[in-house]
Image (cartoon, rainbow, N blue to C red; front, side):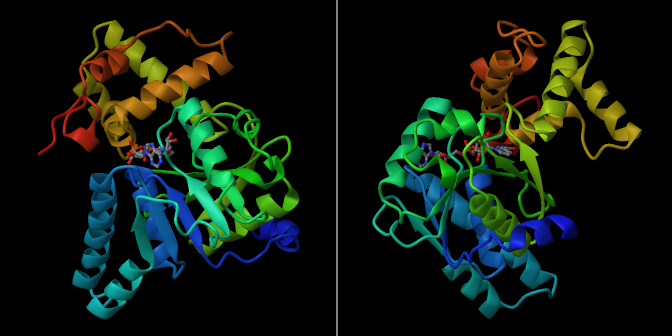
Length: 294
Ligand code: NAD
């Protein structure tokens, strides 16, 4: 990281204000993380209920810090006031970076990124928190692809140290450097990775979910698999993990991966995750996935 920071720092410019598109699991987490490091951030969604959810999750995390004596009610108030929830693009001429964290659907992402590109300053960086979609592919719909970069946080944002910074074919050094510097400012450990579907971590994770699905198909019990992986030493097993991620995000990501690696993955394969998703089970976000949540 030190070497990266040194190599890139001469290209980075300051980020004094940010915006995030989407106030879901990831957008809310990114807004909390930015604000907790003192960075003002706008959080835009198309649903007020999601904005309320994002703000209440941030409040809960901050309240825990106060309970543990790590913060004060005043500091909590100041941090929360740095997050500005909004349903419209009114103030988008000011942020230095906009991080897109809407649903994992290439068409929706392309539409949202093009929409916002027309509203921001010419040198504003557009970043995508996509889990799987190639940055070069998403950049095709943009007028300034050099300002576009992948900034892939992990879930839950406040706990996971890694951020993948993805360089698309046309991404400039300035955009990469600024994103690396921002990830550090947000208390994270950035790694710069080349562009391909799934980048680095999800190239490893999706085959793991695929293997889990095959075990289920062969009759294994998901609870047993989870317990075994926990005994193996992992913090959680695959069924619980996909519930945390969101089955919708998993299914959409798997489609992108299967398209990208058609020689290795079966695009038509429907496993247990997709079957549950088709029954409306999204995981923790709607209270039911492999497990039920209160
Ligand atoms: P989510 O379903 O929790 O949230 C998506 C949000 O986007 C919703 O609040 C929705 O209302 C909003 N949205 C939809 N269309 C919009 C638009 N046009 N403008 C503004 N907001 C819009 O999903 P999530 O888990 O937060 O995932 C968001 C992105 O982050 C996806 O690309 C996903 O692949 C990626 N990601 C997810 C995880 C994870 O574990 N869930 C981890 C890393 C990256």
